[in-house]
Length: 65
Image (tube, rainbow, N blue to C red; front, side, top):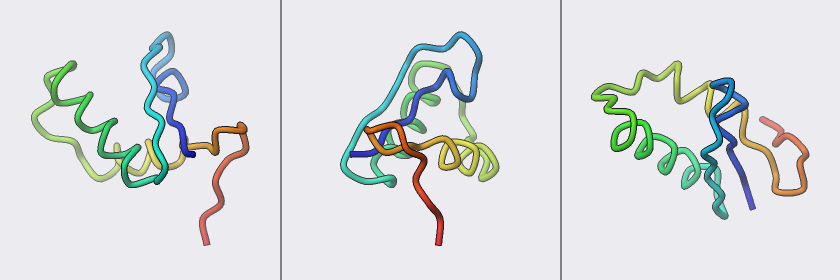
């Protein structure tokens, strides 16, 4: 399982996404930005920031190869 905690990107935020794949976690995070925060455009650099903060559910950072 993969997990993204929004507090790792936005101090004080408590929302998180957890899914089997990194792609699904990113999709859920982008959906949250659009639906809850009203973002109409999610720039590629924001997606990269989200990806950098995705961890395995055991807390270890995922590795990029």
